[in-house]
Amino acid sequence: MRVSVLQENLYKGLSIVNRAVPSRPTLPVLANVLLVTDNQRLKLSATNLELGITCWIGAKVEEEGATTAPSRTLLDLVSNLSPERVDLSLNPRNQVMNLKCGSTTANIKCVDASEYPLVPEADSSRGVAIPADAFKEMVSHVDFAAAKEDNRPVLTGILTRFEEDKVTMASADGFRLSVRHTLLEAPVQERTEIIIPSRTLTEVARIISDNDPHVLISLPEGRNQVMFHLADVDIVSSLIEGVFPEYEAIIPRKHATVTQVYTDELLRACKRSEVFAKDAANAAKIVINPAEAGPGSILVTATSQEKGDNRGLVDASVDGDELEISFNIRYLIDVLSVIKEDQVILETSGSAMPGIVRPVGRDDFLHVIMPMSTGR
Image (cartoon, rainbow, N blue to C red):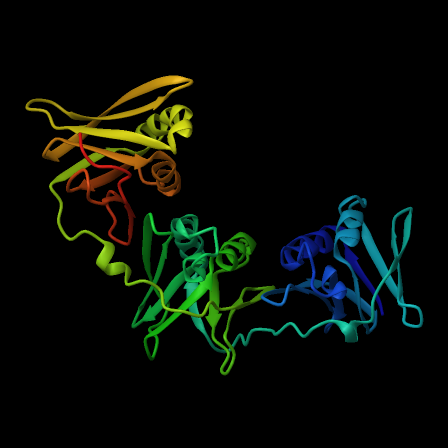
């Protein structure tokens, strides 16, 4: 193998595929990245056997070939090279790859490419297309609410449902629920539900670049996998087996109080309360007060036995009954942080009932938070 690439492109490609390199590989070769020449491009692949990423970069190929190089070694080296052409040449007899860039020369001990597991590539001619911007926003609206512990594996994933001309993503960790819809570029033939690992969707959203107009999602037949195709990157991931909870039953169908408030003002009040709520399992009281004349208010309070307490009053438009409810303030911060609209609506029905947070002016996203305690 003899190939030349630009340092900038090589570093970008390695940074992308390195996300699939396991920190504790079950097989030694999985700590490597696969390099394969492919029609005047260089293909880089990495996998941890559950998530696989393949990236193509432009290259001048003088001699076809393939090898696997230590991912961390190669990434650290390339990141510190000057922004020039990088020449790679492999000695197939001893699997040593020579790297030259400017005045820098390095020899890297590699492993034969035949020892590396197959990383499947997506079929770009089939699949469901989602606009890239919509996909990234969808993931940001749901990934934070997925469970981090794997006591219930299905909750570490994101339910993804394709039905007619709509895709729905839902995540839940037992204390909160996020649901987001968006329209597809073309309707699907049949209703399909899968559970995708939250980490997979987060990585796909992170990899999307300005060159990607849409994300193509496909399900290979006979394999419990999902594939994502971008302009220069393919991602393949195992799916999570199991039955996702019937999340629709968790969403309250009626409410006693509707509160509209500026997102950034409520977010800042929550962040101030978190300073004290950390010592009390993140519990904070939310007191909603309607007003007979003028605006109502939301009072956010938190108390720490060691640090003291905090009270933050925020003007709000309140329609309904006065209410006091306790939430995990971290959960409120998480959802308010991903809402870009100027104002949000908080729908509540009582101190022992879940609350709903949704952006003003759109009906494609809602977030449900369970209360931490009851009473006033």
